[in-house]
Length: 545
Image (cartoon, rainbow, N blue to C red; front, side, top):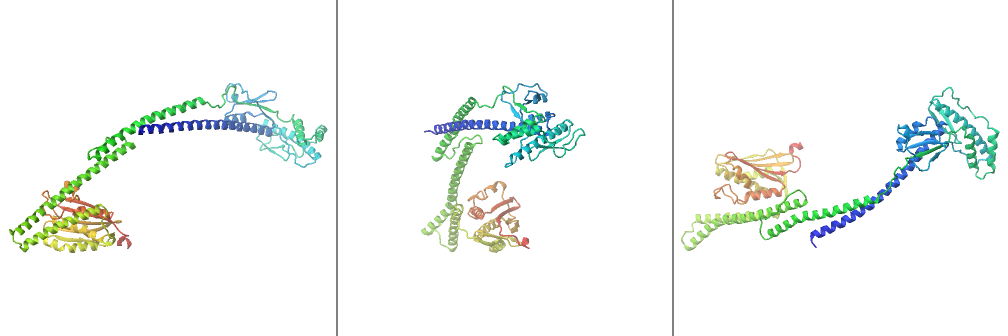
């Protein structure tokens, strides 16, 4: 099965599963929202009835109820119409908001009874309970009348139920026309006591007492309320399945179309990379793939092109290295062969000078071979390092001593600028090899009367080892090739400048293996400076002091 069909099938399966899951989650969420809406409606009804009952309980009248109704309508978002059982309208939230009253909902009305619930302690004798009930009736009549008077006078009323559930009214400001109940209420009438005695024969004694209480305080208590909530023909929260299914179908169709477009967009660059990879494997190192955009496929194409460029560069370096090695060895080996054949044929006399020259040439070829081996091991990561603590100042002093004779013979002053020791963890022999190469090159590039300076400094946690000369300098266009194998600034590649052309390549690899860097700055006619940067071990003596 092709990649396109597999991607298409996979995406269709994902789309179908996602559509089914989306539909199920939508239905489940919608049902949950409906349930939450119903629960919230019940809570709103409970809050409205509770606040209205508390108002009637505390004020003993329904006068001044409009602000409470307006607040409840605003907080709950409900349309509230309040009337008495005789259909006497007390308040309508639509009218309070300044709009024409809308038809009320057909839902059953809610009744609110502001009369208190008696609290008869369990285990009381019937006579005691009847006496408490009679006292509560008289107390409520008095407190309700007092609360109604305070309300009409505009006083702030506070109600607190006592032990029997009857409100105890208090106010911060008591108008003179409102007489506050004092002490015990007036004695109960014989009618009250007679009605209460009828509860002795009732099985539900507490229920009977509550009924009698309600009957006897009816004239003093606010009338019961009939509350209607909502608006007629208001749409209740319902769940429509058709839009959900339509959305699910649209999602599935979009997923299929997206799969087709995705497979086409993915396969085109993949096919191009497949052809390019085949050509690369057959030796066409110049093969590249066209790249556009910034997505993952474009990144893969760029990575492929970078890989192809790297392979091509490696191949070119290998060819160039082979040519350089052949060039370096062809001429001296031809000279050795010619002299050896001449000695064998007796054409040339084996003088000591000739033998010394031939020996020197053989040593040079051996040096080239050794350098090639070191470079190959270094680039392969197989060069062995014995890392110890190394004092770079001592290393520079040893390098200066080793090259002192060569400097004197060339008429070049060799100076050391190392005011304090600097320690690093490194292979001392390999670092001496690096410094020796740099000093040797500097001495060969410096004319008599010039100066080569070995300098050592420190910058933070870095050691800076510098080899400067006052030689002829290196042109700016030659600096990028300075560390290439077998490269010499001398276009004739003659041996007047000495060296195999591998020393700087080996030096850079050794420094890199020590997690350091090597850089060069040069000005024609002024001189050249090589700087090796390495990590130090611990603080400098100046910092420690």
